[in-house]
Structure formats: C-alpha cells, structure tokens
Length: 395
Image 1 (tube, rainbow, N blue to C red):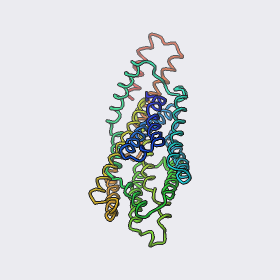
Image 2 (tube, helix red, strand yellow; image 1 turned 90 degrees about the vertical axis):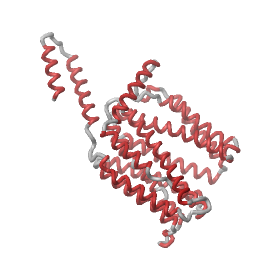
Image 3 (spheres, helix red, strand yellow; image 1 turned 90 degrees about the horizontal axis):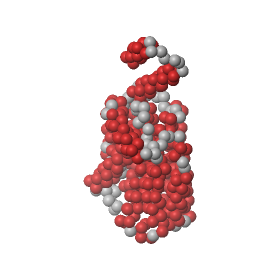
Image 4 (cartoon, one colour; image 1 turned 60 degrees about the vertical axis):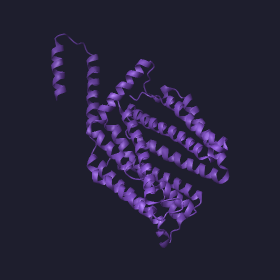
C-alpha cells in the first residue's frame, strides 16, 4: 500500500503555494522583481508537483481497494472541469480587477484547500494507516524494494521508458510561441485565456470518449495515433507564425482560440492510457508506488523538455526582438515528436498478465484459507492437503 498520508502531503505542500501566491499578492516587489518572482514561481510549482504525485498515487490505491477500474479517467475529467472553471475565473478577474486581487483570490482558494485537507480524517480515504514510526520505516523499505522489483520487469519498465522519453526528447517552445502571440501579433490576453478554456473542454471530451469507447482498444495503435496527431498539431504553431491562416481567411484571434491549445491537450491525454495500464498490471500492493513513480518521472521529463526548448531557442537565435527562425524551431519540434514512433515496440499490444496472475493467485489463496477455516482439519488430511496445494501451485 502507498503509505504517505494525503493530509500530511497537503500540510507540507499547500503552505508553499499559499506562501508563494500570498507574497505576490501582498508585496509589490514580489511580483515585479525578477528574482523574487522566480522564487515564488518555484515554490508554487514545487508544491503543485508534489500534490500531483500524491493525487495520482491516491487515485490508484482507492481504485484498487474498491475495484474501480479506470478511475484515472474520472480523475482527469475532474481535473479538466476544474481547469475550465479556474481559467474562466482567472480570465474574469484579470479583465475586471488588478493582478493583486487575482493573487489574493487564488491564495484564498489554496487556503480553503489546505483547510479541507487538514479537517479530513485519514480513515475517510478508506486506506490503511500506520501509526508507529518503526512500522513506517519498515513500510518505506518494503515499498522501495517492491518498487524496484516492479520497474525492473519489462512489462512495466518498457512502457514507462517510452512515456518518459516521448516527452523529454521533444523541445518545448510554448514559451517562445506565447511571446510571439503577445509581442508580435499583439493578441489580447483574454483570447489566450479563452483558448486554455477551450483546450480543457477538449480534454474533458477526449477523456469521456476514451472512457466509453477507447479504453478497450489495443494500447500500441491507440498511442501511435495520439502521438502522430500530437506531432501534426505542433505544426499549427507553424501555420500561425507564418500567417498561413490569414491566407485562408482565418483571423489570428479565431485561430489561437480554436487551435492554440490542441498540442498541449494531446500531450496531457497521452498519459492517461499509461496511468491506467500501469495501475492495472503492476503487482499487488505497490500500485500507488508505481503510479507515483510514473508521475515523478513525467514531471522530470517535462523539465528536461522545457530545458531543451530553451536551448533550441538560443541555438536558432530566437529572442524577444527576433522571431524569424521560430518556424524552423517549430519544425524541429514536430520532427522530434515523430521520433518516438520508431520505438513503438516498447508498448504492449494488449495488457500484460503479470498483475492479473499475481492478483489471481492471491485471490485463490485467500479463498482457500477461508474455505479451510470453516471445516475441521484432521491430522491425517494434512499431508494430503499439502500435496494437493503443491500440485495446484505447480499448475
């Protein structure tokens, strides 16, 4: 079982976000001086990342305990719905109020989240709780050992490697594209904000479609199609930078509103089949550990992707006053997104049976123990039962 308490995680991480956004709301220098602004952004992202890892592990453990298959789909639906409401609220506040008020509102929301987490009891999650420190230490060692054994199997390690590599090898140029939209095209911030809302709405629709129709499809062709669409959607930024959309009668505002967030949404949606696959096939007892390891590895791969994007922008000479080589960078990004298609053999065609076999054997052993507990076992039957159990184990 995943031993970390959700309440403890919120207690450790939410104050970081409250401190970061509260400082930017209360102190003018925190939101205007570059070093302090970067420090606040670092604290906020640190708290959000740790909370994201804990959330994924909790979803995996809860789905296992109550036998809810594909609970990750519902979690992503809730996240997309929250993204829609959050972007709408943020856009409205930016249009009607100064940034200070927006930061205060966000700080209040984070404080409410912290209060709800602290008021929640550990038993409400339906997960076991370890009270003694020695038990926690032993549980940590056991979980690390189980995690190491789980990720060493090809059925788990190969999809995990492909997911991490498919993100980290693609340089992220979203920051350069955003600066181009605001500094060169002079788009209104409300247009970019509404594009995020439409993107989250598309993510919600994609998740619903996956949960109803796509989760029974083989994983390899599904990911192949999604990755190909992701590589092609990056070229939408190329169309915008080269102003090809104006040639076909589509204004920059409409194009950004409808297509700007498509690549980002496909990148988020691509992770969902991996989360469902690994939570279903990993050995019994370490679902939360494997899921949290996946979330941590994905966070690291996104950091690597962002650093590669900064390096690529510097290499091709993209600056705040020169975006002439940005189309070339977007083409390189799209080609890099096609490279993972050459390693599709790392993904299974169907769900491996490693987790199912372990769970089935544990289930049979539990039923056999319950059956034995209801009858009287004679001494003469013990050798016969042992021989029979040995034959069943070999079978």
